[in-house]
Image (cartoon, rainbow, N blue to C red; front, side, top):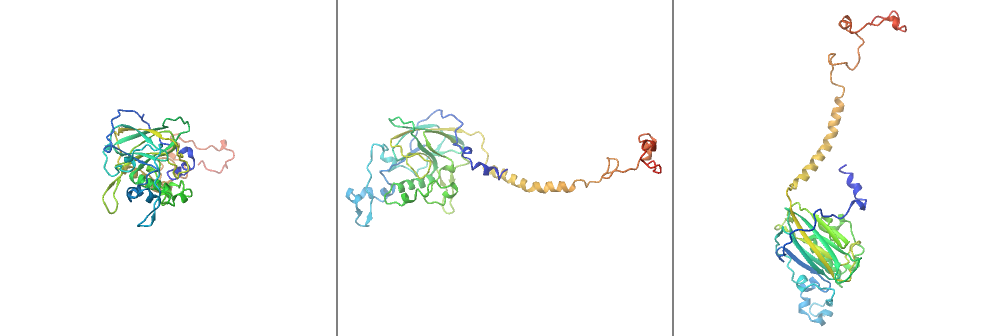
Length: 353
C-alpha cells in the first residue's frame, strides 16, 4: 500500500487541488512595520535590475542607451518608458531592501498592493515555525469591472524568488535568448526543473495558484527555513508572497491583464499548541519498512511449526485416531462394545474391538 497508492494519485487531476486554509482570514490586525516585519518589492517592465547594476541607466544619456557603449562596443537596450499602468514607486524596484533580516512574523497584518500590468508585486516575510500561517489574497482590477480578471499567486523562498526574478528580467530583455526557448521549455515537470536553467519553482512545488482572483492557503513549517552549505555560514530564507501579472513560461498561468491590479493580502498567524519533532516522520516510515521486511519471516516460521507440536492422550486426540478402546472406560459403561447383530455387514469372526 505504501508503494502503490502514490502511483494512483498522480494520474488524476481531481486528486490534486489547491490547499485551502482551515482558519478564517480574520483576526486582530496590527500595523505593518515596513522593512522590520514586512518588506515590499516589485518587478516592472520598464526597469532592468542588471542594466541598473552596471550603471547603464545612470551614466549614459538617452543617445548612448539607444546606441552603444563607445568604450566597450557593447549594444545597450533602449530604456522603456513608464506608463500609467505601472503605479509602483521607484524604491520598490530600484532600492528595495533584500538583505536585511526581518523579525519573525507572529502577528496579523493586512496590506493592499497596486501591481502594474506585466509586473510583479511581492511581500517579504520571515515566517515562524512555531505558528500556523494563513495567507488570504483577493485581487481585482483597479477602477474597472472585469468578471474574467485573474492573476497568479505564488509563495517562494529567497533562493526561489531570486531565480524567478532572473527569468523575469531575462524575458524582458531584447538581447536575451530566453524568448527563443521559453515556449519549448514551458511547464517542465517538477522532477526536472532543478536541471533546467530556465526553470523555477514555488515553495515545496505546491504553493502556486494560477489564473485566480481569490485564494486562501495555509502552511506549517517543519522548522526554521535555513540551510548550511558545505563551505560557508548558515543562510536564512525569507518568504515572498508574489502577485504575478506577467505571462510567465507556465502553460496554465494568467496572461497580462492590461490593467492595474489591486491585491488585498491578509496574513493570519495562529500559535501551534503541539509540534512533533522532524525525526518522527523518519522513525514511523523506518518502522513500517522494518515491519514489511520482518513479516514474511514471521509468517513462514509459524507455518513451518504448524502441526509439529506433540500431543498426549490426556489433552485430546493425536494426529492419527486410535481404534483401541480403553478397558477401564468399557468397565464403567462409558463406552459400549460393538454388537455384531446391529452391524450385519461385519464379519462374525471379527473381534469386539
